[in-house]
Image (tube, rainbow, N blue to C red):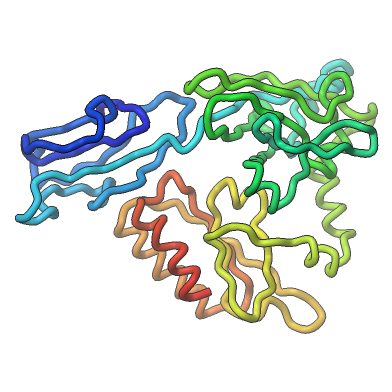
Length: 332
């Protein structure tokens, strides 16, 4: 379809006039067949993450005859949700030792906040942004994990500007530093094209093999249950809880993917917590989203384990985005 700015795209079944705040922010389609099933997809720059914010009909299975006899035009609005900052992270210590099988620091956690966010000095006197659920919502901190495939990583910037890119406290910050020994560096997203192909170099704190994933697994196994429960928090508006369940915070990945946490029973019997069930789903369209709502309620009512549902926000319709918080409030 035609490409517009941060405004809306209109779809009409005839040439009826459409009222827009600014014609330059809209695309208009006329003389479309009312009985044919259509679908909509934005053709946007690679560095954009976009989403529909308003639509009266199902944009994946669009039939304009569903408007009825009282309307002849449907309006859909989209927005640029964020700009992509992506690239490849390379372990320069490994490349210097010719250990090319270790050159991509798989599992390394990165975080990013807009430049000027309050920073806290660590033991070595370096400044780093504290990573917590509270600061994430207040300072706009986002984080991600370096992938095994070519060290790929992806972060989200709300708009162009200067950002502080750092290592998440814990195994990542202990094992790696940026060249020169710094725990953070500044990057600049200079346009609405985002920042793609960023080459991010890191160095090990020592010459030993650095396996962040193994380190985090060992730390998790050695952490006392009481300490882990005390450190967990819940900041997602879409998280679902029951009265019997202690608050359990969505992880850094769940915030990125738009995960919805839920529990259908006691979070744990005396002597230990029950294992959390993770359910992943990729579905788009009102029909599939209806099946998802049925599945959510069915799972909640038929298990005593804590349950976490994972959905990809980009595929969710405006209607589904509004329904999830309501379901959380009603059935949580």
